[in-house]
Image 1: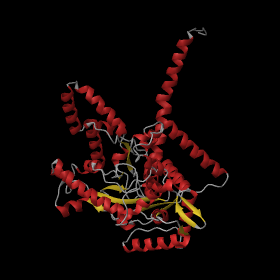
Image 2 (image 1 turned 120 degrees about the vertical axis):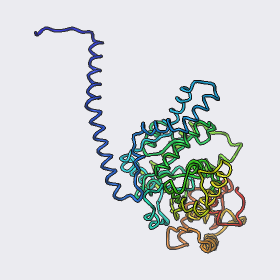
Image 3 (image 1 turned 45 degrees about the vertical axis):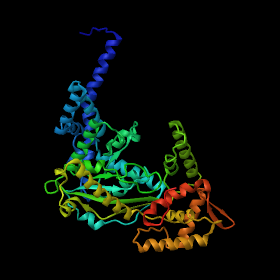
Amino acid sequence: MSGQITIAIWLFLLLLAIAIWAVLDRVLIPSTRWILRRRINRVIDEISTRLDIQIKPFQITKRQVLIDRLVYDPKVIEAVQQEAVKRECPREIVQAEVIAYAKEIVPSFNAYLYFRFGYWLSKRIAKLLYRVHIGFSEDEAFKNIDSNSTVVFVMNHRSNMDYLLVSFLAAERTALSYAVGEWAKIWPLQTLIRAMGAYFVRRKSGNALYRRVLERYIHMATKEGVCQAVFPEGGLSRDGRLQKSKLGVLDYMLRNYTPEADRDIIFIPVGINYDRTLEDRSQLRTLDAEAAKRSKWFVIRTTLRFMLRSLILMVMSRWQRFGYACVNFGPPISMRQYCRNLQIDFSGMERSPRFREVAKLADQLMAAIKKVIPILPISLVSTVIKNDNRRGLSASEVESQTNRLIEELRLQGAPLYFTTDSRVETTINALNMLTLRRLVTETDGLYKPVDAERDVLAYYANSIVHWLPNAQKPV
């Protein structure tokens, strides 16, 4: 029985591939999944002892189960039927589109990646670029929030750094789920972002079927108590001012909300400000209708050049961070109490009256956000220098006018944040930063704005313009 069997090389390779696949499928892949699942469960058990707002079962449910729930949601099925009749096409074609939308939207939250890798990465990047501070926080109010509530952080949107900054600062309290735009749908970034619990949104989509699927996902997540972070402005501020709120996401959350039957929704206002935002010039450029559109290659080249220059400065020990990034957390707003006070029930309203009520709520939330946006020295000094129409200001004149502005804001209860105890030192530091960025020139001891950069100065001044009733219109 020691004979040999000769087989073709292609058949040998096929048998070898089948054997390798069998080992992977039956031994290695299940073992790897078990190890990963064990680590994830260990992380969940560990962080559950210290989080103020617990991870909900919905967040750790298998992604395919959530996709199926969304695809076969009664209102989604109804929309599929209507769309099939409208297009006069088979229902299966429309259903396939819905499945694609659901797969695009639904995240695959991974607690290990979020709290081990994501938290570490967010912290490293944020602290590499900025001196990060929490101005003030309603800690006692957070501890008193009902654990069964749905918590929604509503915040102003100044930079794409907002995602990292707030995730890092809120990681001791909860895991946040963001709505992320199409800009992040590139491999491998989209896989990482989805694993961090974010869901993708086509912000300017007019597709009614897609909007229905998105609405039902946000409804599901809100109803199940998932902690979310929302930018009511709908996008980055282009001129530095707080923009008018968009009602879409808020309406999706409240459209079927019954205050006495559903869990409470707690909105927490969050204010963010930076001494420097990385996108300031690019956002201002979008306001110029005549500006030539820049290619993707230009954006990539500019970004790589910036990263290379920063890396060289780090190696040479000449790297300087971009000043301060500050976040304030305001007092929580309970939707159950809000509805009781106004005697309204969003679930029983028709579209027009519901939108009017959602708009009123949005205005109240935006007003709460305005009250907690940190006022940083760069904003103050930019306001003073931008408004100077003379030959320039000396450092003492800038400091004197900044002090007057500080006192005016302090009387209004504005959230002022200073980096040092000395106002003189604070003003000089801000002037030096503006001079280094070539937004301000210093000649014979007089500081004046660079004419070509006045719009950038206005961008930073506009972050506090809501506290100044006599402020000029946007530049």
